[in-house]
Image (cartoon, rainbow, N blue to C red; front, side):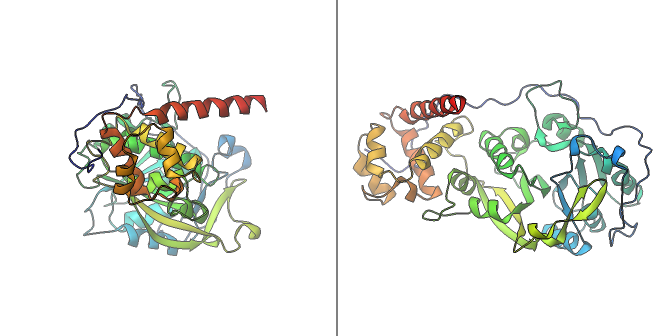
Length: 393
């Protein structure tokens, strides 16, 4: 018989998540740069014109798909949403890819501790000069937050190795239930948002990379399109695996919506406005993603969390299948009791389950002494078929 999930004996699954075991030093600067630069006025109130010769622009157009705040108003809004308590209080701010530094200046002027993680050599000289202002708490480091912990330890900067970076910054590991130790601020890369969201999810559920240090909070600008996906509910067209996994793992708050016209990009050595066709009725959403204190339980742990991800993927790949058919395919005993605890009928679709119901389902299956985790086999078979089809085409 199925019983309440809370309090059931734990039964850990085979560990399928492996974190990087080797780290190397993350360098703190590109060396002496002599090219001229003009970024922001020293008062940090308004951006001034800034150009870089094409031959001096960053290699591989690293900033091609990056966005930046286009006015002091946007930067001040970010600070107001982040700031809590007196100056100097609260967790340290890690700003990923601050670029021309408008938000950086606003954070520093508010008395916040900031670590600027910049992946583009073009922007480093001016960011470094901000450290000279008295009373400002700023570290500038040459690394890429979105290229975290690569498997190849010989990968040069700006690849970022979390363990070494956090150690050098004096950031210690804290228990999962402790308060947020660090806040990450920035923009998700416009062309790889989905990839970044998946990488962060795997890190979060396995408590690896940045999440090895506790419940790291993300305060990020994201496209309205991707934001709607991660907050989508059953019955909505955007409801998918990302929706379930992010809502299960984090408290998701929409802090602010800003028209896309308020942002600029870096092209051909200049900060430029976006094309008019890209702006129509589009916004960036500034969201807060705070990992839940109660995410992990006796039956959902960093060790078996990959199995939970597989379960959700497989179920939503067959979202129109009836619950009873899915349960029967898994050879589950006592399906009636499980349906009763889920408060569902046999004919209802597996895609009708809410994130908390997927979590309950997984925990109930993990605590069962008879369930054989058949979904893992099904998931691996589906991946194999998909890979063969892709190679064929």
